[in-house]
Image: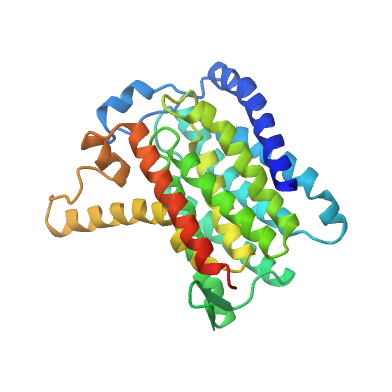
Length: 325
């Protein structure tokens, strides 16, 4: 019941913040520049306010801290660790968005700058979870109910690259109206259920609050979008997804709940590799793969519905895979 209340409070707060933030972002001329290589009809979206991720980030932060205060007084801090982790990634995204808005082009921080920052944050987060006793070196395998042990150094390196890959996969998914927020919503519901099921009620406050915030944000971000989350929001979401997976000590579950993110990333990798090997040929019309479906005639709403539905099914499958843990 507490999870429902937190989600509802975050929903209401995000709705209010959205009403205030969107006009403010317009007044600041914080409009999105559209990638030149994207579908040409996306040019009509140029100037739509970006950095809207601040809307659900603020509601999630307030509700997580308020709801988790009692747990914090009892020495439970994991929810704050995950929140802080996601916020730091959101800050990296904010710097990227700010540079794009300031210089009026769709390029912010360099790829190397973002990679180094993200890798450092990931390493610090894993070390903190290890110190707090939230993660072990045992990697749980869903469905088989078994774990295999890794050397701590190997585990840390593994975790760092999984986190950076996951965060940027979520970022790639944010390419059409509502997609990243819609896909991440059921993932947050899944993590809320899992945290409660395993007696980590305080940790559950964070995904519950984020689920409510995302539901409200969709009121503004669903097609036709009134605001974009920007890298501010998408990197925050990426940090939230992988942060929760590691805080619950089940990183391999990302393969299931993050199925859409993975497909988006793999489509880009396949396209780039094939393009280089064949000197200009392509597998898809455009990547990430949601753009391929756009060019095949799918509407943004249809892509949203299909991708979110797939994520819901994969979350149910993930629940079946870990419920016996």
